[in-house]
Length: 59
Image 1 (cartoon, rainbow, N blue to C red):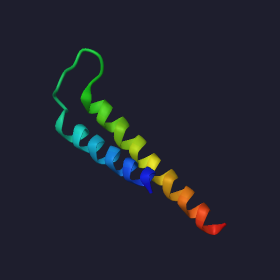
Image 2: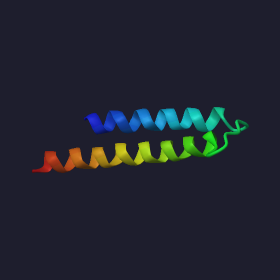
Image 3: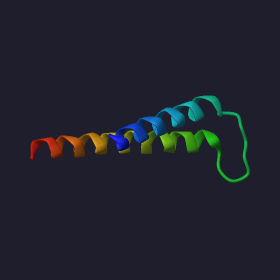
């Protein structure tokens, strides 16, 4: 259950960063791209946590 919450939180923060920081310039990495990566990682984490929860209930 914790993995699902963390994944959803990361996805929400990533989408917010992705939508609000298109024109922000930083010297190392653009926040727009970092937000997209966070959203993808968060979605994947939530998905894998759900799959793990489903496998535990089948046993």
